[in-house]
Amino acid sequence: MIITLGGRAGSGTSSAGRALAKRLGYKFYSAGEIRRRLAKEKGLTLAELNKVAERDAYSDKLVDEEMKRMAETQDALVVDAWLGFYFFPDSIKIFLDADIKVRAKRLVERGNFEEPARSVREAVKLIKQREEGDAVRFEKRYGVNIFDQNHFDLVIDTSHNTVEQTVDQIYRFVQSRIAR
Image 1: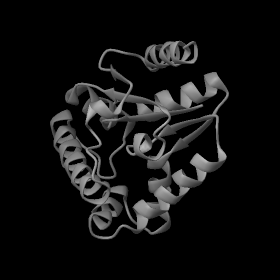
Image 2 (image 1 turned 45 degrees about the vertical axis):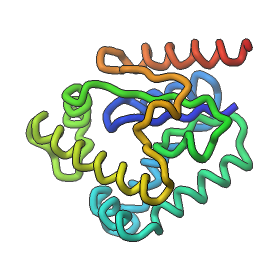
Image 3 (image 1 turned 180 degrees about the vertical axis):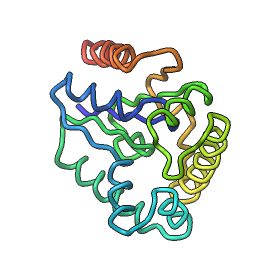
Image 4 (image 1 turned 90 degrees about the vertical axis):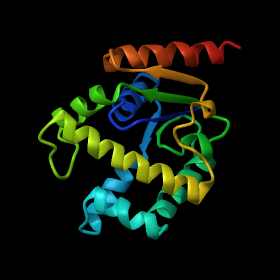
């Protein structure tokens, strides 16, 4: 079984995905981690790599190829990727969201910006810029709206959840799907 997690920046997809994979004994794959590694190899920040990706599909194609390979070779997998629902259409598809100020606060506290945001207000602005750019890029390249919740089987608002609470919700949903 493959479970895909998509969602807004700071909604908890990576944290929940890692914890869910551990609970299930599955392998965990994060497109974001692949992109961060690729940016580092190229001497770029993730924001710079994303800007390059708006003009050049190279980095997206590398991630795409890795996802396609995994789709062919893995059957016990949790995938954290905006396009997980697209590359794994038969997966259990989960979307995580949260209030933008909550997401900004989480990202500031974790230091998830290459250029540290000094305030939640600044982080909100950076998140909006990133998500708008990514949405346009993926719409143009793949013809899909990555934030359209109709692509997903379950949508969870993580604004007031701990990682454990989110994982529990996903786990119960997955178990209910298996029981069918």
